Amino acid sequence: TPDEWVPRDSRMVRLTGKHPFNAEARLKDLYSYGFFTPSNLFFVRNHGAVPMVDEPTAREWKVEISGLCQNPVTFSLNDLRSMFEVVTIPITLVCAGNRRKEQNVVQKSLGFSWGAAGLSTALFTGVRLSDVLEFVQPQKGAKHVIFEGGDNLPNGPYGTSQLLSWARDRRKGMMLAWAMNGLPLEPDHGFPIRLVVPGQIGGRSVKWLRKIELSRQESQHHLHFHDNKVLPMPLGPDRARAEKDWWYDPRYIIRDLNVNSAIACPDHDEVLQVASTDQYTLRGYAYAGGGRRVTRVEISFDEGTTWELAQIHYLEDLFRDVPYDDSIYGTLDLTESDQSFCWCFWSFEVGVEVLKSASSITVRAMDESLALQPRDMYWNATGMMNNWWFRVCIHHLE
Ligand code: MTE
Image 1: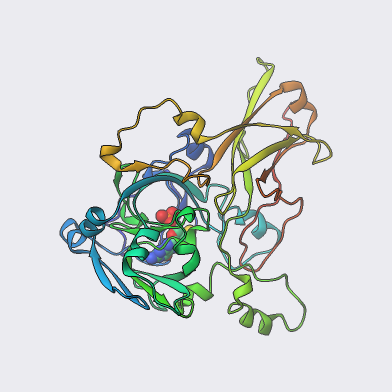
Image 2: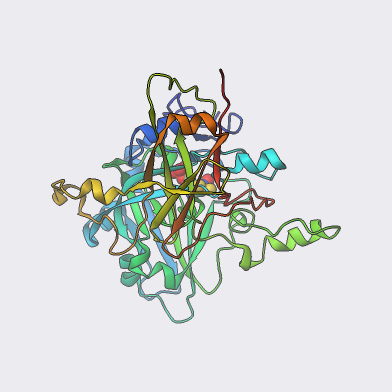
């Protein structure tokens, strides 16, 4: 296959055929590394072959910025590094298809079956997109910023766009990043440079970034329209025609992530040896979109009739007392002022007696806008944004 040269970890679970590479770690493995995912276990979503970029090519790599701006310019990585403040931000990327498997079990959607590990977190290092846009001086009439990757797909390069007003907003934290957890990006994750859009679905974070264009209209790239939408529920005989139009309906585009959570311990199919102990600690993750913080995680042992509060662990708690040398990676911006772009973990101690009498464990999270995970699945044709309550069923083996 074209990607044979790309280094990959055998623990990654392939979700599609041999090519392109789409893979997630086992949720328990992913979780066991803590807040930051090593890049070899970071989920991968590729629509085609990984562009082969060696060191010399990377040194020559250029990002061209054109369109409705006063200073169209072409930057090398070194230009970006030397001209703008270098920042490091903890960011969780989540594929819009995370947890799609549950939807596909109900009815096959158009996408492949991600488990609940279609997400990962890293400290991304780069420059702020808002600073770069300030430099090129957007002109009147520009409304969208279009990003294009260097991969060669059957329907043209991968590309998508952002509203210019969002892209200029420093609080949104969008960045042009060349490093993950202090190391250069891996080929699968966009080496030598990618866009990272915190708080939005992973599909907006264009890898192998080549071009930025300021424009009156949104991206016209094939996958900007034919991907990353939540189309309405099936509607009867006119569905096929309606679906064709729906791809182009800007109301159905997905930008911000929705609030979500999952249980990592115990994992599905895990056999618990609990006889000798009377307490077990349930663990998992939660995240929200748009820089909103997860404010509540709740657990139920009776399918949602009653709920108990889990304890939430935020990344910031961990970092409070750690000295940080910003001469290496630039300014470490943990929360990008009041924004939260990193997943949090939760835990809940439960007596084994409770688990013995329950038939399931359910988790749900709420974010600071008081958005709450729904009880019911919103099945949709693309199988995206699946955030109904997450359950692990308990089977009693005795
Ligand atoms: N960028 C390019 N150029 N090509 C792609 O196929 N996939 C997108 C996005 N950026 C993609 C891309 C999708 S759908 C996701 S979810 C994220 O990259 C995945 O990023 P990762 O593979 O680094 O986890």
